[in-house]
Image 1: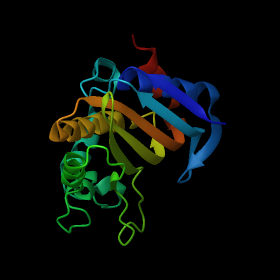
Image 2: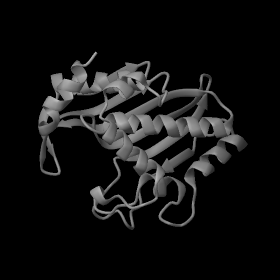
Image 3: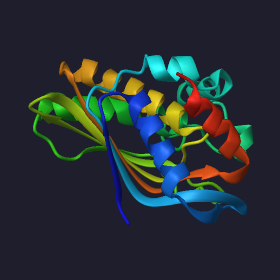
Image 4: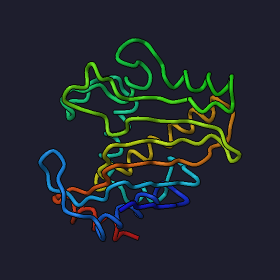
Length: 210
């Protein structure tokens, strides 16, 4: 069963998919932890602003800060088995000095209708114990602006998904500014959208806040 969520903002998208998981998710597991899961989810956000009021008001601050560090710092991530951070994968791919964000900006400056301005976060030679949840970012111009599709193998929408959305919106804005385009839509294609069983009550409590 495929699930689609269309929202104006990233906060509405997060709350929308989290509620759908709690209502319709099926029992599953991820790395041995029990979950409620929806398979093959597509989120489309029309106006992705990283300074989102719903997330600022309702999301756990420590989770936002943890994800911000993951996307901003090139230090290894201890909680993920000392895996490379997203910042390394984006701006210093596999420690080679390759800045993939600069690469997609230059490609779209040179060819505004390019359909191959893509970034991979996968590092197959070193990702032996960890595969990044956000695996592919595909940027493209369309009439409304610079849009991005993010393919994700798994996203925890109980304690991390809102922070993923914030960081993807930051990155999309960075690329749009570099290209000189307005910001278009943000789309996430998620194979496994889930909430861990031991986070269900906390997630419900957050979603009940006004």
